[in-house]
Length: 456
Image (cartoon, rainbow, N blue to C red; front, side):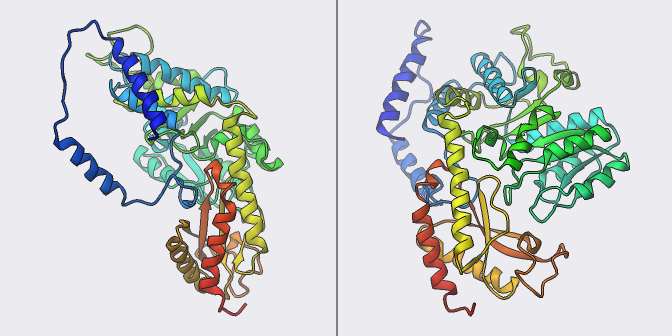
């Protein structure tokens, strides 16, 4: 934490403490002389990590929280509010309602029911639980590139689950979806706007057309990609999918990904507030401090960190969800960085790229080699070599059909078991665009070291 931020936080803490200055003084949990040594031990232990906050970390979906989110979370933790009931988090509950309203407004929902959650998994669980209440006995359908949490959650809820094949770009295949819908066994289709592996965007606009023909709910899992609705530089195809969000039944988005928040901050939104009736329950000891809505009355989770709401609210005040604003520009920078990296990879003799550019900010590529097996081995070698030069990437085992049909001549493209280990980069930091030359130089150096001697 920078000195300036520490000073700002210290002044804010004093202002917060002044609000209870009329109470009798007391001292709780004073730190002894050993505290400093213990915290230094903690710092030593925490050095055993990748440099997640640095632009040279371009691997998994790890984006550092904004300094104001860190400060607001820390400030709130001096109270440690619980946003289940107003008894435990009166101010933070009000801030959560306002923060969730800002998320809903971003998706053009003037009316909604929603709340924050501990993460996308639990938020998706609530969406599918409500879907099961409304469409009992019917199945949940999601693409084979959707997050594995949906099949797992369906099993937990006792709901049938159907996997829909994806096309060669990792999007839900509508020619495979429609026959499944025609059986009338599908109650909810999970549409992913930003898959975890490659950032692909399902064709939501076309799925909405199918909804007019068949009776099913649409749940959008935008845990990763949802904030890109603010970006102005998406492809027309991707833009059309995001513009269809206002017409779906429920949405999940994770502020702890692109929303610049600490972990433990997901959210679930329903377009129809009437689904709140499914949450109704009685508590003999919880809801007595106010007749106003307690967030625990519209949530399956009980105790939740009110500090998450405070941090999100503060970040939204500094960086509002305005098209063309600073927050939106950060998303546009990430997408621009992904497009530029894809272009450079396509021009390189060392690498193989999918035929279509990235839809969001996730890029994947294979190593130019005669077979998927050789390519996979080289990908691992380049991954290791790049890390030695402080460039941290990720690996993903993906279907060979994601690459052009002539990439590996002796490999059938229609075999779902045929996969290749790819290098993968999530360029989710706005700084990645400015640092792209540094990333590229290190990647090229690793490739030269590992594959320059391989016959092309």
